[in-house]
Amino acid sequence: MLFTRLIKQHSILTTLYKESISYLSPTNLNGWWNFGSLALLCLVVQVATGIFLTMHYIPHESMAFGSVEHIMRDVNSGWLIRYVHANGASFFFMVVYFHLFRGLYFGSYTYPRQEVWNIGVVILLIMILTAFLGYVLPWGQMSFWAATVITSLVSTVPVVGVDIVYWLWGGFSVSTVTLNRFLSLHYLLPFVLIFLVLLHLVFLHEAGSGNPLGIDNKFFGNQYVDAQRFHPFYTIKDLHGVLLYSIFFLFFVCFAPNFFGHPDNYIPANPDQTPAHIVPEWYFLPFYAILRSVPNKLLGVILLLLAIIVLLVFPILVNKTINVRSNTFKPLSQFVFWLFVVNCLVLGWVGGKSIEYPYTEIGFLSTVFYFGYFIIILPFLHVLETYGLGLYLPKSPKNSLFVRRYVRSSGSLLTALGLKRSQAYAVHMSFFRIYYWYIRFWPSTFGRVFMILLVEAIGFCLTGYAIKRRMHRSQTFEFCMYSIIKKHTLLLPKWLAKLIWKVYFFFPIP
Image 1: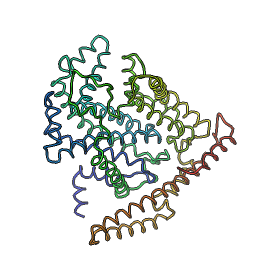
Image 2 (image 1 turned 180 degrees about the vertical axis):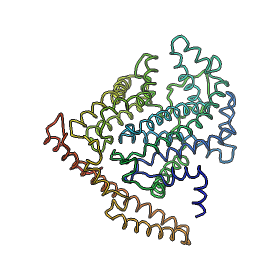
Image 3 (image 1 turned 90 degrees about the horizontal axis):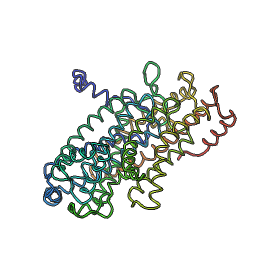
Image 4 (image 1 turned 180 degrees about the horizontal axis):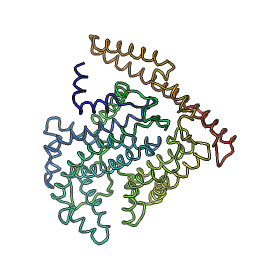
C-alpha cells in the first residue's frame, strides 16, 4: 500500500511503473523476443567492466600493452573483468545479430515500428564503431595493424581523404595521440548507446511490441486486444533467458577466454613487422568480406557503408506493398530468409580467408545476394505472396475472422495449454505459492537448487508445447481467414492458392 502511494505521488516513478511493470505486451511472444532484454544486459555489463578497466589502462604506445598485462596479472580479479569485457563484446554482437534477424523474420521493420527499426540500425552502427575503437586499445599486433588498415580507408575520399587520415591519427602514423583519441571515444560512445537504447524503448512502447503472427495488437481506439502485463509474466521469462545466457557466457569466460581472440594480439605492436594475414574480430568479418569483394578500394568502402545504409532504406521499399508482416505464413519468404542467413555466414567465412581463388569469387556473389535480398527480393516476394498467394488482410480488423478467433483463443501460457482464463489464473497462483514456499523454507541449499532446476525443466517443456500448440492453432485460423476473403488472388487461381496453403500447413511446426 505504501509502495503504491509512493508511486502515485511521484510522476517519474509513475512513468517507470507504467513502462516497465504494468506495460502491456502481446500474450504470444516466444523466446526470440528475449534477445532484446539480453542486449540491454550486455550493454550494462560492458559499461560496468569498461569503467573498471579504464582505471588501470595507460593510453601510451610504449605502456598500453604492458598495462593490459598488469590488469591481467596484478590487479585483483583483473583477469576476470578483462575476460568478461573482451568476451562480452563478442556475445553482445551475437545477441544483437539474433535480435536483428528476429526483426527481419517477423517484420519488425514495418509500420508502425519503422522508427524502432531505424534507431536499432543506428545503435548497430555505433556498436561497430565502439567495438573497433576498443579492439585497438590492447595494442597488440592485430590491434595496431587493424587501426592502420581501417583508418587508411578514409584516404579514398577524394581531395581531402589523406588529410582526414592524418587528422584521425594525430600525426603521420598510428601513435600515442591516436590511442588517447580512441580511448576517449571508446569511453564516450557507450553513453551515446545508452541514450539511443532509451530512445529505442520509448518508440517501442509507443508503437507497441510486435508478435510472431505479425498482426496488430492495438485496435479500436488504440486499446490492446489481447495483452498481459510485462511483470511478472515476461520478467520471469527474461530471467529464464538470462540464466541460459549466463551459462554459455561464463563457460567461455572461465574455460575458453581466448576462443574469440586472435593469437597475434598477444604480441606487442610492432610497426616494422606486418602480420601475414590481417583479420578483424569475427563480428566484423561479413562487412570485411563486403569491403574486399571488389578490387577497387573506393568502391569497396562505398559498399561497406551501403551494407549498413541498406538496412535503413529497404523498409521504404517494402512498406508500400506489405500487408502481412511476419514470415510465419510466407513459405517463400521463409526459404529466402534462411538463404540470407546462410549467405551472411558465408560472408563471415570468406572474410577470414586470404584474397585468392575461390574466396574472392564467393565473396563477390555473396555480396550481390546480400544487397539483392533487401533491394529486389524482399519487395518482390511481398508483392507475390500478398497478391499471388492470397495473403491479404482486410483493412478493418472487425472483418477479420482470424482476429476475432485469435482474441478469443489466445492467452497466457496455461491458456495456450487448454485451460480457461479463470482456471489458468488459479493454477498459475497455486504453482507460484508452492514454488515460493519451497524455495524459502527448504533447509538445504542443494534442495533449493534442485527445485529451481526442476522448475526450469518443466518450464522448458510447457513453453515449447504451448508455443507449438498456439502457433498451429493460429496458423489454422489464418488459413480460414484467407479462405473467406473475397480478394483471394490476382496471380493464382483460388483453388491453387488453397492447395498451396493446405500443403504448407500440413507439415509440423519446427
